[in-house]
Length: 243
Ligand SMILES: [Zn+2]
Image 1 (cartoon, rainbow, N blue to C red):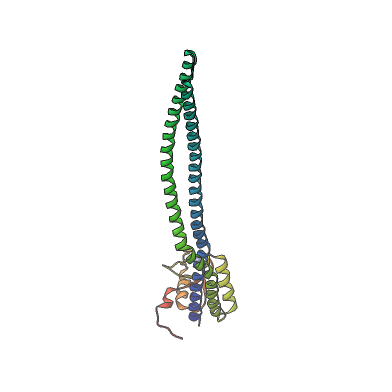
Image 2: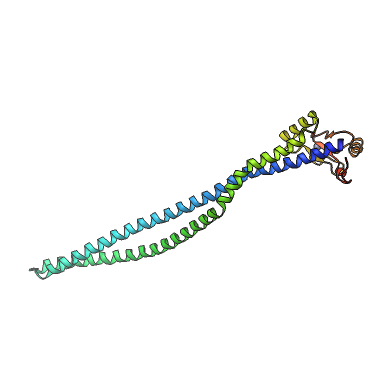
């Protein structure tokens, strides 16, 4: 009789263990999902940032191109005017203007080269950011559906196990069910403790010799004097099943 009650209690604990694992998943899986979504978001914004850097650079390149074009057409204009110059002084002045503009053009051209180098470097970073995004999206494609399905199922899996546990609970006396329920609720989801080396398997409290003997008789339900859990001697499962 007591043996059967103890076996029922340890089976109930197995259902609660499973419920506990589902609860851990209920906490963990949404975090995993969020991490996957976040890495796609982060990779997307990284790519956008490098692309806007490139847009800025291209803008600077276009400005330099325009400056070069303007200086060159000015140089052409001055060169045409040279033929119409009457005085040596005017000729010199125009020539030095042309020299100044030519100097400016070559300066701008070397800036162009620097920006070209920068653009090549940015292109590489864009490629790396694209690869990164593709990888994050692959991971999302591969895992999001399964994770969401798993998360959606957890609550009903918990319900199923709870229902099975409750079916067993109703076969026990009310005071034992109450004690079991309190332990599950307040003692880390663990109501049943298998004794180990003369101690409570849950809290490690040393069991008095008299109680150790009683535990092996299975004549009454024994609670740990320290943590209150229902103690079961593991020899309960040594014998073949009997009524
Ligand atoms: Zn204990």
